Length: 280
Image 1 (cartoon, rainbow, N blue to C red):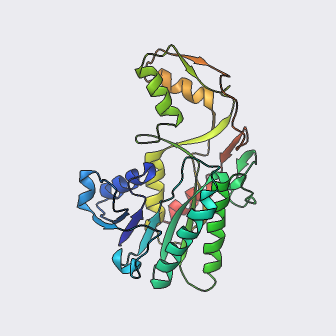
Image 2 (tube, rainbow, N blue to C red; image 1 turned 180 degrees about the horizontal axis):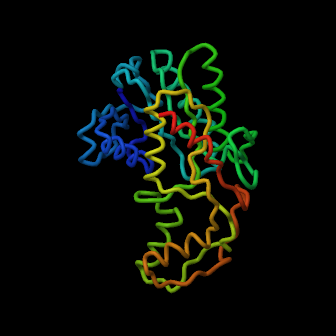
Image 3 (cartoon, helix red, strand yellow; image 1 turned 90 degrees about the horizontal axis):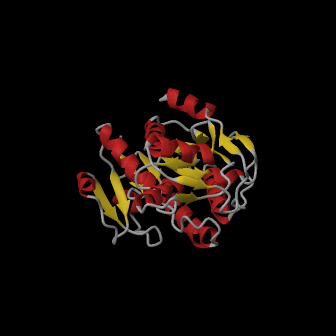
C-alpha cells in the first residue's frame, strides 16, 4: 500500500513516520520547501510544496498514494486564533478536495477533542459537536465539508479525534516539557493550576500506532476518538511523572487559573477505536 503523510515533522507526525518504519513501510512525506528534515527521513520520498500553493498535479506529485495520513495544521498552539477558520480551513479543504477528485481513495485526518466543546464527562463519537474555540470550530467544519464531498466523490474517511498526547518532541509550552525544564534549572516548585481537571492522556507513540493501523485497514471508519479511555487528574499525572523520574520538586497548586476554553472533566470513549482496530 502506498502511504503519504503530511505534517511528518510535527509532534505526532515524527512518531507516525517512526511507526511506519517499524512496520517496514516507507512513505511519501509532504513538507514545505524550508523545512529541515531529520536525516532518517531521507529514506522516504520527500515532496516539497505548500498547501496554500498547490501544483495542479498534487496527487501525482505525492505518488498517487492509496492512503493519506493528514496531520498538517498551522497556527497551533493558539487555539483561539481566527487564523484557523479564516486561512487554515479553506486551504486544507482545497488541498484535500483536489487529491480526492484526482483519485485518493482513503483519507485519515486528525481532528480534536475540542470539537466536542464544553461537554463534561465521557465523550462518545455520536455526541453533538459544539466547538467553543476557533481551532475546534475549523476542524469540525472541515469534517463537515469532507462529508458533503462524499456525496459526489467516493472515498473512505477516518476522522481521528485526538485527545491529550504526551511524549518526545511535544511543544515546549506543553505540561511535561515545562515540568522537565523546571527540574533541569533547579526550581524548588512547579507552578500550575489547582490540578483537579480530569483529562484523557495518551502516549504519542500509542496514538501513532493507532493512526497507522487505521490507515492500513482500508475501511471507512468515520469519526472516532484516539484516546486512552481513562480519566486522570492533572495533579495526579504530574505527581506520577515526578515519582517515576525520582525528581525533587514541589507543586505550587493553584498558581494559575483553570483554562476557560475547556470543561473541568472530560475523557474519551475508546470502544469504537478498539472495534475499528480489530477490523484491521
